[in-house]
Length: 539
Image (cartoon, rainbow, N blue to C red; front, side, top):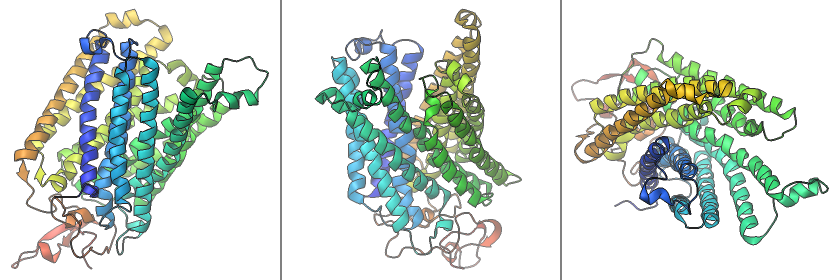
């Protein structure tokens, strides 16, 4: 039995937590859509009689952002596959990895239970403490991943030979060390203000303008907003960076072609991390910033279009005239590209301060945010799950059910969130919700949401059935991939690579061919001709 400090076990535990959280989050979204928060007996008095809709929205966002979009792509897939892909037997600090996971579980319990406390103030304090603990766990993971990539790479695994998934996890860890430390400090100080009577926020404001007549609560909130958005805007890219790496990896594998302009992709990932950290102010255009500040943040936010364009061009170039294998994992990867492009167009509009101020509370932002960060990232996670499921569990997910699930979900999310963009524009310009309701658009969105969430039961059945009775993964490398995790048995052994860690002789995406298969895969009568060259295959 695997030790609880085994990075593969911990990675699976993160994925189980994310799977539970995503289905709870989807259930909450249905309650929000149909306004059932105050009608169900077990939710009617949620958190001491506070407004059910707003409280459920915070709980939905907390679960999805922290325990799905942050935990699954970075801590889940990263904990499991980062050491395998760089030729390491374990992460740098196994004990810290284990402690970070259980801190995340403790944070999950605190955040969810905070909404059911009878006193609102006590619930808010518990929520802030849960967020602080989650930040501490994520900071520990970021340090662990960074040291692992820098110090524990296998023989021959130079930086240019790293898979793009590892580059994404590594850059994300560096970004995470910055933003999670900021929110950890801010949450701790806010909790001290609330419980110990300190004035970390309001005191700084009064020292800056001692004769101003201001509300202490308003000033505290304003300074808190600044520190919070240092984290929250960059958090979007903490969720998306691993997805960029996963999608690029999947497209190259199933297109059977090297990543087009691979080094430019690495630079683009670095640029996303840098620019993503610098544009926190675009969420405070209407908060009284200096009139020149919105211009700076608008330029920085618009500059994100350059690395995003490089990524999209690389994906298109990789797929151009490729012999694409239309597996379920490949479909979800291409679905991610489509959703990212669709949501990115509206993101360019929101980079303008006037548009952001006008649309700040409309359905336009809701549709944009969910398409880019929520749904696109989920497609990348599902693609990665279908791709790595044989390696993690020794069985394969059913491809027919997977493609059915993909088709309904892909059509459904467009039917839900594209009309929201239009609704937001009309509401902002005309403020005519009655006219919109008469057109039946909200009803159409609600029906599409029910169908889309219902389609996730297909995935849940496929997942459970495949775990118990799915087709066994007889081959170590069913996808004919090139990276090191496919050189070991499925599931991998406790020490990952056995007695000898394989040496690395080439980059991660040497496709095209035909090429000679490794001797271990060749029959005694005839060596197969393959269109890929694994990283560990000696010249």
